[in-house]
Every structure is written in structure tokens, then in C-alpha cells.
Length: 445
Image (cartoon, rainbow, N blue to C red; front, side, top):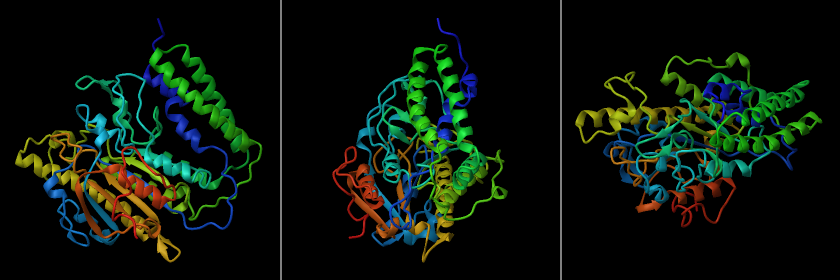
């Protein structure tokens, strides 16, 4: 019979569960680039749980002659750099009950394995394919952010582990990437990466890694079979990280330079006052990461699957997010649902406006970005993966044909959008999941 190890002890063990993504950020400096540095292209994916009030989401008109819907009105300032995409769906998420099959697959377009335990299986997410394309060109390969801790246990109603609902970025089918929840820690991570190894920093990283490895090995003998699987995966990842840290200790030469200055005087608070401030600070962290070129790929989760965050801070809202998404066509719940949707879009607009305000050569950081906004459901009351609410803001380095509402034939694969975005990012693929080709009209001819 194995010894009981609490979640607090597991997380405290030198950061075995949460520390690994941090250690990933402390890896060796990237190799020297070949040729002159060009303006980098960035991609961020923002995920909103629980779907939308569909009638108030969909714009009127198509092509360039369209009017923003009530929910999308906060995007008026970036309408010329916006794509609204209607009638996309994620076919491989149609099975299964509830949220998890849909929401875990929003960036993988894969059917996840139904399991209540550690033997999870999904696919590689589109953000990580992009991160692989630019690996070594920035200190951090990607940045995964959220505001809600990982949910644990099993959703007994549908029989899926709640881990699925806590991650949208997957580096391998069995390895979801942990999210950073503390905005100050994110800033410190970016600042450290931008500053580069100083003094004995690389040696200290190596010592920290050794401690985590030792703690993980000791812990392995005291946990159950499910946790052994997870620890084995972590240890495998850590051996790869260890090699990179060792190269840094040996004196790798760093040539990367931040494209904008950072100062710890600008670091955000460790504990935001509320959900609204927490979210805004995370938008700021993505903006800082992109402006400095510390990373070019980021994901952010406004909440986990089945999120029931209270939105009482919004005038006219008296309930939690998940509760109002199950509106059962009640007029007042639909009204509140739309207000919550609009708030999320406003945060997306805030990030886009920030990037638009950041000058880069003759253009802006937004010109060199693709910022995806997506929910894995359309009508949350039906758990419907058809007609998904999908937006893309930014110029994509001049590749995106923005300023349009594109309406496709019903059930156009969401994966086709990702094929187009991968092409724009310089990481073209013949196929992604169930794609049938690039999404017509997204890329400039």
C-alpha cells in the first residue's frame, strides 16, 4: 500500500508539478542566428469557456461590408485588423458529453481519450507546432498563462479527468503544458529571460534542477500508479532540460537581445485585487513578452472548462459564468450571458489595442501578430461544437486578409484555420488533424 502524498506536498516538492515549465524557461541561451534579425511574427491564443449567446455574437453582413455585433463592439478600434470567422466547427470534439472533449481539443482538433486517470491522450496543439518553428530564436519557446488553478479529480457526471479542462496547450499527446497563474512571477520570468544568464545563474539553475530531480525520484516511491506515470513523464522531460542547463553552465554564448527594455520597477502585483485585474495583467504580460521578443507564442485561458467564475462585478450580472451559459432560453440569463461574453471580448480588444500601440519599425507589434480568440462551444446550453465563435486579430506579418467577416459553408473544419495560420507563421503543413486545406479567404492572395 503506497504512502499518501498530499497535493500540497507534491507541489511543494521543489516545484515538481509547477516548477518544470519554470525550469524550461531557465534553459540555455538560444544559438546564434544566421543572417540579420527580421521583424518577428507572433501568435497568441485566448480561450473563453462556456460558449456564447449566439444571436448577439454573429455580425450582420459579410466580407468587408459588415457591422460588429453587440458582443463584438469592443473591437471597433481594431476592426480593420480583425477576421470574424463563422460556421467553423471541431468535428473530432463532437463525441462525449459535456465540456471536456470540446474544450481540451480547441487547439488540437483531436478526440481526447476518455479516462478518469493519468493515462490522458490528446494531440499536439497548433501553438506548439509554431513554437517548434522558432525554437532557439527566443529565450522562451512559449508562454502558457491562466487565472484559475488546475482542476483535479474526476467529473463524475461525464467520467473525464478534470485535467483536460485545465489545459489547451499540449507539447505531446500526453503532455499538457502547465500554466503560470501569478502575473508577477510571469514578469520576473520574462525579465530574467530578457536579462540573460548573469554571474553564476546557470550554475544555480543546475543546482535547482538537481534538487527537483532528487525530490521527484524520492517521491516516486511514495505515490500511486497514476502519479508514477506523471512523474516518469516529468523525469523524462527534465533529462532533456538538464542537458540544456549543462550547456549553459559550460558557457554558451548568447546573441539574442530584447527588442524593448524591461524594468523590475514595472512588475505587476503578486496578488491581483480581483478577477478583472488578474485577467488584465495577464494581457499585459503577453504584450510585454511580444514587445520584447522574449517569446513569440502564448496561450491564455480565461477560465477552466465548466468555469463558474462570478461576474457580479459587471453591472446587471448576478450569477456565475457556467450557470448563465445553461440559460434554457431564459431571457434574463441570456442577457447576462451576453454581458459576460462582451466582457471577455473587451479583454481581447485590450490586448489587441496594446499591441497596436507598440511601434515596431514602420508598423506595430499587432501588424506582426496573429491573436486568436476562441471558445470550444457555440451555444453553451447545448454544448454545441458547431458554428464556433472564432476571431483572429492582427496582420500576421502582412499575410492575413483582415477587416472581414468570412462566412463559410456549414461545418467548415476549424483545423483549416490552423493550416492557414501555420502557413502565415512560416511553419506550413500539408494537414493538421481533420483539415482539408487552408481556410479560403484568410490569407492574402
